[in-house]
Length: 343
Ligand SMILES: [Zn+2]
Image 1: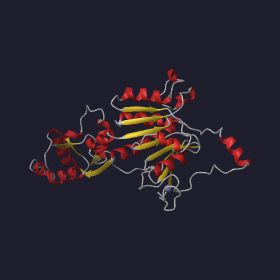
Image 2: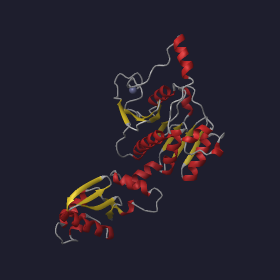
Image 3: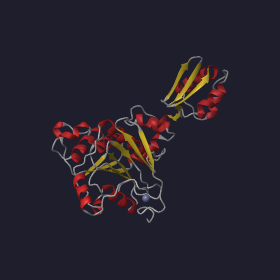
Image 4: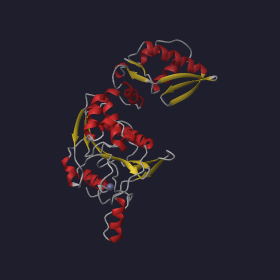
């Protein structure tokens, strides 16, 4: 049986009426709108099996036009696809709005696995949302302990956690929020591309670590070589960046465009630069930290749940701290890429 989805809203607007399905809002002549109100109200009370059932129900003016409008909108949901008491029901409204079947998306998410490399500002936010959305298995990779300066933005840590292993604290906190998620901890420092082979393969690596400075080169090469999907979220100075979201054999990789400065040249001046840069800390700020994590979360759930477009694929998205504006840098798959073209 089918009914009206909860994200439908009907509002008067002057001498017209709005039929709203999520952000899809249509302004209608009042006669048609009033007929739609009657149809929607009736379907809410009495779900229908197939469309022909509805056509026999009403005899008021515009009934067939109103029915057709409602059926062609994104307003209908199978009654079994929304259960108010289900812990994921609010996410299911969104999957329904995205024209996906909530139960199918949820099953895919629950059978998926991710590895979060770096449990800092971005990693803690993502661990929170991914666990509360029901991702089946989460591996947390970090070698650091919680410090007082982490508390501004690393949302799962408290003052009493200072000195404790970050990954262990994140595990404790996400299990409090969703005990159904399988969480494992890998306390390791990534010291080379080869050290990445210590990690188990999962559906997606979420790279939210900022050191060492060669990390992204290693991750990209390793993931391309091993057909491992990943997304990078980090900082370029005070700009929070997401992407490119790498899907093997489909999207561009981190090296398809020349977007990063070189750092392996030898010589006195380059040695001095390396010495100076060891002291570097990105001017991270909690405001865009949370926005970047949320942006990445949207893409991660779409990827794991198999619906919608992945917005950070084939591009790098930047969010500026001072103005909160978005900047998009296209990274087109390069047939001559030194990393992904030869695989
Ligand atoms: Zn490439």
